[in-house]
Amino acid sequence: MQKILVIMMALALTIGAQAQTNDSIDQCQFVVVYDFVTNTTDKDGNAVKDSVQLAVMVGSHAAKCMEYNRTMMEDFGEWRNRDYQYGEWDARKYNLPVLFIGSPEGEVSSFDKVVPNRYFYTEPLPDFGWQLTDDTLTVSGYLCQKAVGKYAGRTWTAWYSEDVAASFGPWKLRGLPGMILKAEDKDRIFSFVCAGLMQRTAPIKPFSKNGYTTLKRDKFITHRNKLYCSKQYVQKPNYYIPQGTYDHLNIIEMWPGGPEPPADEKLSVVATDMIIPKKVNKYQPLELK
Image 1 (cartoon, rainbow, N blue to C red):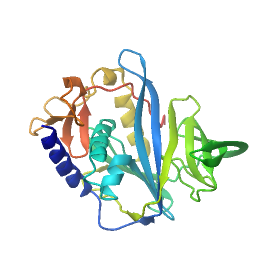
Image 2: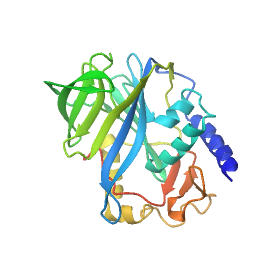
Image 3: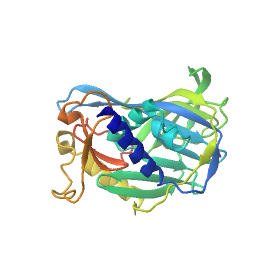
């Protein structure tokens, strides 16, 4: 069963990679990997952490932020690596977006999803209004300086290193005199911490918008927060999906690998890049507005 699972994963990932086009928007110069942790609660109110790794492909004028294992396979060809296969599969339960920072020029492009739909939006590059301070901190061996800024209803503390010559960071965090290697919000719900830098080169390829509904950024954020912040979501993650929506599809019940887990630990695979988790923790929105 485990061998069959790996074959099916490789097939699904190959199909998923076809969402990329053959063009490129920039050339990746290096990759920064981040541990992204969300402090939240389970459906019974117990404190828990959601944790996933992100990879930022840094180019000369643009960057791409995507789940780490998926990046290694789709952008750097590491299809046969079992660790990346299982890691990417496990991370699917978060339905993470793919972000292009600085593409188009002066904008952020977001390829996101609220199951069962995919959404695309652009917005101007966020202005965090950073206030620079003299405080310092060493992160992953790099001396960093502190800055405080605001975006989408949250206040962020970021630590950036001028020794890493790029004005990008994890997620949409950007706009400082060096690469952001650590960041956390004022409420200590979210943290991004650099787990390492890799000297890897590859074209930063855009995604096709085929199959995505284009929305205004504010409308998408309102729509997602309304559904996921509902008390019903943590009790029943598919509460808002009309009954019968997937009657015409062959939904596959799968898991990242190893022995077959309990039913609520499996993933309901809807499409190559979209799943319905059986169990979720309370949703914490990065963007409040």
